[in-house]
Each structure stands twice: as C-alpha cells, then as structure tokens.
Image: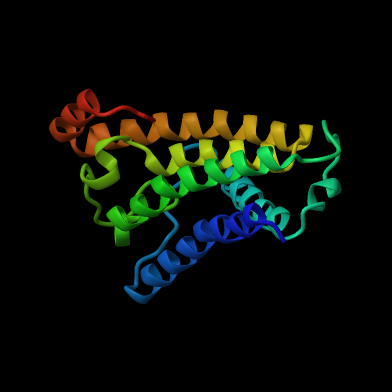
Length: 194
C-alpha cells in the first residue's frame, strides 16, 4: 500500500467521521439534524443522499484502488499516482473547510433551513466563506472525479453543483429575512463561496 493510498484512506474517512460525531452531538443535546428543505423536498434529499454516496465511494475507492472499475462510463482505465495525489490534496482542502464549519455551527447545524432557534455564524471559517460546507463539496467533487473518472460521477457532480447553488440562494433569502441588518452587512464583506 502506497503512502498516497494510506493518506487517501485516512483523509477521506474524516468527513464521514466528523458528520457522525456531529450527528451524535445533536442527538445527545436533543437537537434534530433535519431542517426544512429549501427547495423541492425530493430533489433536496436526493442531493444530500448523492453527496453521502460520493463521499462513501471516495472512501471505498481509497481502500481498493480498482474500485472505480465498478462505475459505468469510465473515461480512463488506470489512475496514475499523481492523479491520486491531486485527489488527496482536494480531499484535504475540503476537510479544511467542512470540519471547522461543523465546529463553528455546532448544535445549530441543520440539513436544510432551521426550524428551531438559530444564530447567524460569521466567525471562524465563516469569515472567508458564507457557505464553507457547500464550498467543501467542490473540493470533494474534484477528488471524486479524479479518483473515479466516470461520466456517471461527472453527471452526479454537475447535478449536485447546480442543485446546491439553488439551495444556497434560497438559504440566503431566509437569512436576509431572519437577520436583515446583520446578514446584509455579512454578505457585503464575505464571498458566497471563496
């Protein structure tokens, strides 16, 4: 097993471990992790399922180097080490955004719009991006395509990017209504993505 493969195994497991720990924390504090979908419910949940599927597939592809052969419509038959290394770099970059975002939001994290008490988070990683969790997905998607170069993966990524953009636009409307003055100021000084 190469050093790159070992790194991919460890680094690609972190988002799943962090998500599980956050879910445990929310349950332990009596908080729900599910909010109100900001777009059509079936599309919202399909998108969330797809990101989970892609992250799990990335982890499995890290464990078993030829795992990507299970996907249809491959555009290459072998993954060079430099491509794996680049995938590792993208996963690492995604983790640098996702894990601090989880920590910053903590028990206020929801999948969807809040249905209970919530706060506008503008500190930590939220100083550089209004949507660090969604931005982290860009890096994870790049890694997924590098490690599993399939047209099916490319289609799922494109669909998720488009859908997440509409989710963000609706979440921004919600935040503008919930925190009119604070969110407008925050929006003027902080990028939507990076």
